[in-house]
Length: 331
Image (cartoon, rainbow, N blue to C red; front, side, top):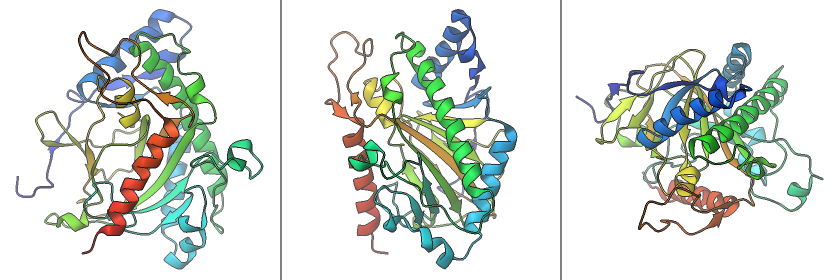
Protein backbone atom coordinates (compact mmCIF):
# COMPACT_ATOMS: atom_id res chain seq x y z
CA UNK A 1 0.00 0.00 0.00
CA UNK A 2 1.37 3.45 -0.95
CA UNK A 3 -0.33 5.40 1.83
CA UNK A 4 -0.83 4.55 5.51
CA UNK A 5 -4.48 5.44 4.92
CA UNK A 6 -5.11 2.88 2.17
CA UNK A 7 -7.20 -0.14 3.09
CA UNK A 8 -8.38 -3.43 1.69
CA UNK A 9 -11.98 -3.52 0.51
CA UNK A 10 -14.15 -5.39 2.94
CA UNK A 11 -16.48 -7.86 1.26
CA UNK A 12 -19.73 -9.08 2.72
CA UNK A 13 -17.99 -12.42 3.14
CA UNK A 14 -15.79 -10.88 5.83
CA UNK A 15 -18.38 -8.52 7.31
CA UNK A 16 -21.82 -10.11 7.65
CA UNK A 17 -25.11 -8.66 6.50
CA UNK A 18 -27.69 -9.52 9.15
CA UNK A 19 -31.40 -9.24 8.40
CA UNK A 20 -32.93 -8.23 11.74
CA UNK A 21 -36.56 -8.39 10.58
CA UNK A 22 -36.81 -11.71 12.43
CA UNK A 23 -36.63 -9.81 15.74
CA UNK A 24 -40.21 -8.71 15.06
CA UNK A 25 -41.40 -12.26 14.37
CA UNK A 26 -44.01 -13.87 16.62
CA UNK A 27 -41.93 -17.06 16.56
CA UNK A 28 -39.27 -17.36 19.25
CA UNK A 29 -37.07 -19.50 17.02
CA UNK A 30 -36.96 -16.71 14.41
CA UNK A 31 -35.93 -14.13 17.01
CA UNK A 32 -33.39 -16.51 18.52
CA UNK A 33 -31.85 -17.18 15.10
CA UNK A 34 -31.19 -13.46 14.63
CA UNK A 35 -29.70 -13.32 18.12
CA UNK A 36 -27.29 -16.12 17.23
CA UNK A 37 -26.09 -14.22 14.15
CA UNK A 38 -25.63 -11.05 16.20
CA UNK A 39 -23.62 -12.96 18.81
CA UNK A 40 -21.24 -14.43 16.25
CA UNK A 41 -20.67 -11.08 14.53
CA UNK A 42 -20.16 -9.16 17.79
CA UNK A 43 -17.60 -11.67 19.05
CA UNK A 44 -15.60 -11.83 15.83
CA UNK A 45 -15.94 -8.34 14.33
CA UNK A 46 -17.91 -5.90 16.47
CA UNK A 47 -19.22 -4.62 13.12
CA UNK A 48 -21.83 -5.82 10.64
CA UNK A 49 -24.31 -4.51 8.08
CA UNK A 50 -27.97 -4.38 9.12
CA UNK A 51 -30.82 -5.03 6.67
CA UNK A 52 -34.50 -5.61 7.41
CA UNK A 53 -34.45 -2.70 9.86
CA UNK A 54 -37.77 -1.24 8.72
CA UNK A 55 -36.60 2.36 8.24
CA UNK A 56 -38.15 3.60 4.96
CA UNK A 57 -35.62 4.29 2.22
CA UNK A 58 -37.31 7.63 1.60
CA UNK A 59 -36.63 8.71 5.19
CA UNK A 60 -32.99 7.59 4.96
CA UNK A 61 -32.56 9.57 1.73
CA UNK A 62 -34.28 12.63 3.23
CA UNK A 63 -31.98 12.57 6.27
CA UNK A 64 -28.91 12.67 4.02
CA UNK A 65 -30.42 15.36 1.79
CA UNK A 66 -31.19 17.59 4.78
CA UNK A 67 -27.67 16.98 6.09
CA UNK A 68 -26.22 18.26 2.81
CA UNK A 69 -28.52 21.28 2.95
CA UNK A 70 -27.42 22.23 6.46
CA UNK A 71 -23.71 22.06 5.71
CA UNK A 72 -24.13 23.98 2.44
CA UNK A 73 -24.90 27.09 4.52
CA UNK A 74 -22.20 29.66 5.32
CA UNK A 75 -20.39 29.18 8.63
CA UNK A 76 -21.93 32.36 10.04
CA UNK A 77 -25.39 30.86 9.51
CA UNK A 78 -24.44 27.52 11.07
CA UNK A 79 -22.88 29.38 14.00
CA UNK A 80 -26.35 30.59 15.00
CA UNK A 81 -26.88 27.08 16.40
CA UNK A 82 -23.32 26.60 17.73
CA UNK A 83 -22.97 23.80 20.25
CA UNK A 84 -21.32 26.25 22.65
CA UNK A 85 -24.76 27.87 23.07
CA UNK A 86 -26.29 24.63 24.37
CA UNK A 87 -26.14 23.18 27.88
CA UNK A 88 -26.81 19.67 26.54
CA UNK A 89 -24.31 19.19 23.71
CA UNK A 90 -26.69 20.11 20.87
CA UNK A 91 -25.68 22.20 17.91
CA UNK A 92 -22.93 22.84 15.39
CA UNK A 93 -19.20 22.24 15.81
CA UNK A 94 -16.86 23.64 13.14
CA UNK A 95 -13.99 21.72 11.58
CA UNK A 96 -11.41 20.31 14.00
CA UNK A 97 -13.47 20.88 17.16
CA UNK A 98 -13.10 17.25 18.26
CA UNK A 99 -10.33 14.66 18.37
CA UNK A 100 -11.70 11.13 18.43
CA UNK A 101 -8.24 9.68 17.84
CA UNK A 102 -6.99 11.62 20.90
CA UNK A 103 -3.96 12.96 19.04
CA UNK A 104 -4.94 15.42 16.27
CA UNK A 105 -8.29 17.14 15.61
CA UNK A 106 -10.70 15.54 13.16
CA UNK A 107 -11.22 17.19 9.77
CA UNK A 108 -14.99 17.21 9.98
CA UNK A 109 -17.84 19.46 11.04
CA UNK A 110 -20.80 18.23 13.04
CA UNK A 111 -24.38 19.05 13.97
CA UNK A 112 -25.42 17.30 17.17
CA UNK A 113 -29.12 16.39 17.57
CA UNK A 114 -30.82 14.16 20.11
CA UNK A 115 -34.03 13.29 21.89
CA UNK A 116 -35.80 16.66 21.73
CA UNK A 117 -37.02 17.30 25.29
CA UNK A 118 -38.75 20.46 26.57
CA UNK A 119 -37.14 22.56 29.29
CA UNK A 120 -39.72 21.42 31.86
CA UNK A 121 -39.03 17.70 31.33
CA UNK A 122 -37.81 16.15 34.65
CA UNK A 123 -34.57 14.92 33.06
CA UNK A 124 -33.88 18.41 31.71
CA UNK A 125 -34.75 20.16 34.97
CA UNK A 126 -32.31 17.79 36.70
CA UNK A 127 -29.68 18.65 34.04
CA UNK A 128 -29.07 15.02 33.16
CA UNK A 129 -26.18 14.55 30.76
CA UNK A 130 -27.09 15.31 27.12
CA UNK A 131 -30.80 15.70 27.90
CA UNK A 132 -32.56 18.80 26.60
CA UNK A 133 -33.87 20.63 23.55
CA UNK A 134 -32.25 20.62 20.14
CA UNK A 135 -31.14 23.81 18.44
CA UNK A 136 -32.99 23.84 15.14
CA UNK A 137 -31.52 25.77 12.19
CA UNK A 138 -33.77 28.26 10.43
CA UNK A 139 -34.43 28.54 6.72
CA UNK A 140 -34.28 24.82 5.92
CA UNK A 141 -37.80 23.63 4.95
CA UNK A 142 -38.57 20.17 6.27
CA UNK A 143 -35.36 19.88 8.30
CA UNK A 144 -36.92 19.65 11.76
CA UNK A 145 -39.73 17.31 10.67
CA UNK A 146 -37.33 14.99 8.86
CA UNK A 147 -34.79 14.79 11.66
CA UNK A 148 -37.39 14.22 14.36
CA UNK A 149 -38.94 11.40 12.32
CA UNK A 150 -35.52 9.91 11.60
CA UNK A 151 -34.49 10.02 15.27
CA UNK A 152 -37.73 8.30 16.30
CA UNK A 153 -37.22 5.58 13.68
CA UNK A 154 -33.64 4.89 14.79
CA UNK A 155 -34.63 4.84 18.44
CA UNK A 156 -37.18 2.14 17.58
CA UNK A 157 -34.55 0.13 15.69
CA UNK A 158 -32.17 0.49 18.64
CA UNK A 159 -34.74 -0.87 21.08
CA UNK A 160 -35.25 -3.88 18.81
CA UNK A 161 -31.51 -4.38 18.59
CA UNK A 162 -31.30 -4.43 22.39
CA UNK A 163 -33.75 -7.35 22.26
CA UNK A 164 -31.40 -8.96 19.75
CA UNK A 165 -28.46 -8.45 22.10
CA UNK A 166 -30.40 -9.97 24.99
CA UNK A 167 -31.06 -13.04 22.83
CA UNK A 168 -27.41 -13.06 21.75
CA UNK A 169 -26.37 -13.20 25.41
CA UNK A 170 -28.97 -15.82 26.41
CA UNK A 171 -30.78 -13.29 28.58
CA UNK A 172 -34.55 -12.71 28.83
CA UNK A 173 -35.77 -10.67 25.85
CA UNK A 174 -36.92 -7.84 28.13
CA UNK A 175 -33.62 -7.75 30.06
CA UNK A 176 -32.66 -4.30 28.74
CA UNK A 177 -36.12 -2.73 29.07
CA UNK A 178 -34.98 -0.28 31.78
CA UNK A 179 -31.94 0.61 29.67
CA UNK A 180 -34.32 2.00 27.01
CA UNK A 181 -36.00 4.50 29.37
CA UNK A 182 -35.41 8.16 28.30
CA UNK A 183 -32.16 7.13 26.63
CA UNK A 184 -29.10 9.06 25.66
CA UNK A 185 -29.55 8.85 21.90
CA UNK A 186 -27.49 11.24 19.82
CA UNK A 187 -27.54 11.82 16.08
CA UNK A 188 -24.57 13.46 14.47
CA UNK A 189 -24.87 15.03 11.05
CA UNK A 190 -21.33 14.92 9.65
CA UNK A 191 -19.54 16.62 6.77
CA UNK A 192 -16.03 15.53 5.77
CA UNK A 193 -14.19 17.67 3.21
CA UNK A 194 -12.19 15.65 0.68
CA UNK A 195 -8.57 14.94 1.55
CA UNK A 196 -5.68 14.05 -0.77
CA UNK A 197 -4.51 10.44 -0.93
CA UNK A 198 -1.17 11.49 0.55
CA UNK A 199 -2.78 13.50 3.35
CA UNK A 200 -0.95 13.87 6.63
CA UNK A 201 -2.37 12.76 9.96
CA UNK A 202 -3.71 16.26 10.59
CA UNK A 203 -6.14 15.85 7.67
CA UNK A 204 -7.84 12.64 8.76
CA UNK A 205 -11.65 12.88 8.71
CA UNK A 206 -12.04 11.01 12.00
CA UNK A 207 -9.07 9.53 13.83
CA UNK A 208 -8.96 5.90 14.91
CA UNK A 209 -11.39 5.44 17.77
CA UNK A 210 -14.02 3.23 19.31
CA UNK A 211 -17.53 4.56 19.93
CA UNK A 212 -18.42 5.59 23.46
CA UNK A 213 -21.94 4.25 23.87
CA UNK A 214 -23.81 1.00 23.32
CA UNK A 215 -24.93 0.87 19.67
CA UNK A 216 -24.10 2.80 16.51
CA UNK A 217 -26.12 2.76 13.28
CA UNK A 218 -24.27 4.52 10.47
CA UNK A 219 -26.06 5.98 7.46
CA UNK A 220 -23.40 6.97 4.92
CA UNK A 221 -23.52 8.45 1.44
CA UNK A 222 -22.16 6.78 -1.67
CA UNK A 223 -18.62 8.11 -1.17
CA UNK A 224 -17.62 5.72 1.61
CA UNK A 225 -14.50 6.36 3.67
CA UNK A 226 -15.20 4.23 6.74
CA UNK A 227 -12.32 1.90 7.63
CA UNK A 228 -12.42 -0.82 10.28
CA UNK A 229 -9.38 -2.37 11.91
CA UNK A 230 -9.22 -6.14 11.60
CA UNK A 231 -7.83 -8.55 14.17
CA UNK A 232 -4.54 -8.54 12.24
CA UNK A 233 -4.25 -4.77 12.64
CA UNK A 234 -4.90 -4.04 8.96
CA UNK A 235 -7.41 -1.40 7.94
CA UNK A 236 -10.32 -2.62 5.84
CA UNK A 237 -12.75 -0.40 3.91
CA UNK A 238 -16.43 -0.85 4.78
CA UNK A 239 -18.20 0.58 1.71
CA UNK A 240 -21.88 1.55 1.78
CA UNK A 241 -24.44 -1.08 0.77
CA UNK A 242 -27.69 0.57 -0.38
CA UNK A 243 -30.58 0.18 2.05
CA UNK A 244 -28.42 -1.02 4.95
CA UNK A 245 -26.75 0.46 7.99
CA UNK A 246 -23.25 -0.25 9.15
CA UNK A 247 -23.75 -1.29 12.76
CA UNK A 248 -21.15 -1.52 15.48
CA UNK A 249 -20.83 -2.24 19.16
CA UNK A 250 -19.58 0.58 21.38
CA UNK A 251 -17.49 0.69 24.54
CA UNK A 252 -20.51 0.39 26.82
CA UNK A 253 -21.44 -3.03 25.41
CA UNK A 254 -17.81 -4.19 25.47
CA UNK A 255 -17.65 -3.14 29.11
CA UNK A 256 -20.94 -4.84 29.89
CA UNK A 257 -19.82 -8.11 28.28
CA UNK A 258 -16.30 -8.07 29.73
CA UNK A 259 -14.99 -7.64 26.16
CA UNK A 260 -16.78 -10.76 24.89
CA UNK A 261 -18.35 -8.44 22.31
CA UNK A 262 -15.76 -6.27 20.53
CA UNK A 263 -15.71 -2.49 20.42
CA UNK A 264 -13.60 -2.17 17.29
CA UNK A 265 -11.29 0.64 16.21
CA UNK A 266 -12.47 2.49 13.12
CA UNK A 267 -11.71 5.75 11.33
CA UNK A 268 -12.82 7.89 8.38
CA UNK A 269 -10.42 8.60 5.52
CA UNK A 270 -12.18 10.57 2.79
CA UNK A 271 -10.02 10.13 -0.32
CA UNK A 272 -13.04 10.02 -2.66
CA UNK A 273 -12.21 13.51 -3.93
CA UNK A 274 -15.78 14.51 -2.99
CA UNK A 275 -17.58 15.93 0.01
CA UNK A 276 -18.63 13.06 2.32
CA UNK A 277 -21.80 13.12 4.42
CA UNK A 278 -22.99 10.65 7.02
CA UNK A 279 -25.51 10.41 9.85
CA UNK A 280 -24.44 8.11 12.67
CA UNK A 281 -27.00 7.39 15.39
CA UNK A 282 -25.48 6.63 18.79
CA UNK A 283 -27.65 4.81 21.31
CA UNK A 284 -26.28 4.88 24.86
CA UNK A 285 -29.37 4.22 26.97
CA UNK A 286 -30.75 5.30 30.33
CA UNK A 287 -28.14 7.51 32.06
CA UNK A 288 -28.91 5.89 35.44
CA UNK A 289 -28.42 2.35 34.18
CA UNK A 290 -25.39 0.64 35.69
CA UNK A 291 -22.83 -0.95 33.39
CA UNK A 292 -21.47 -4.01 35.17
CA UNK A 293 -20.48 -7.43 33.91
CA UNK A 294 -23.56 -9.24 32.58
CA UNK A 295 -24.56 -12.78 33.58
CA UNK A 296 -22.79 -15.38 31.46
CA UNK A 297 -19.99 -13.07 30.29
CA UNK A 298 -17.32 -14.31 32.69
CA UNK A 299 -15.29 -17.36 31.75
CA UNK A 300 -14.14 -19.76 34.46
CA UNK A 301 -11.50 -18.07 36.59
CA UNK A 302 -12.11 -14.61 35.10
CA UNK A 303 -12.88 -11.45 37.02
CA UNK A 304 -14.67 -8.37 35.68
CA UNK A 305 -12.21 -6.15 33.81
CA UNK A 306 -14.11 -2.95 34.57
CA UNK A 307 -15.66 -1.48 37.72
CA UNK A 308 -19.40 -0.83 37.72
CA UNK A 309 -20.33 2.64 36.46
CA UNK A 310 -23.50 4.41 35.37
CA UNK A 311 -24.07 5.16 31.70
CA UNK A 312 -23.98 8.87 32.50
CA UNK A 313 -20.57 8.80 34.21
CA UNK A 314 -19.13 6.56 31.50
CA UNK A 315 -20.29 8.94 28.75
CA UNK A 316 -19.17 12.08 30.59
CA UNK A 317 -15.65 10.71 30.88
CA UNK A 318 -15.51 9.73 27.20
CA UNK A 319 -16.68 13.17 26.07
CA UNK A 320 -14.21 14.88 28.39
CA UNK A 321 -11.24 13.00 26.92
CA UNK A 322 -12.24 13.79 23.32
CA UNK A 323 -12.76 17.51 24.00
CA UNK A 324 -9.51 17.88 25.97
CA UNK A 325 -7.53 16.14 23.24
CA UNK A 326 -8.81 18.55 20.58
CA UNK A 327 -8.27 21.68 22.70
CA UNK A 328 -4.73 20.70 23.68
CA UNK A 329 -3.49 20.06 20.12
CA UNK A 330 -1.12 22.63 18.68
CA UNK A 331 -0.44 22.31 14.96
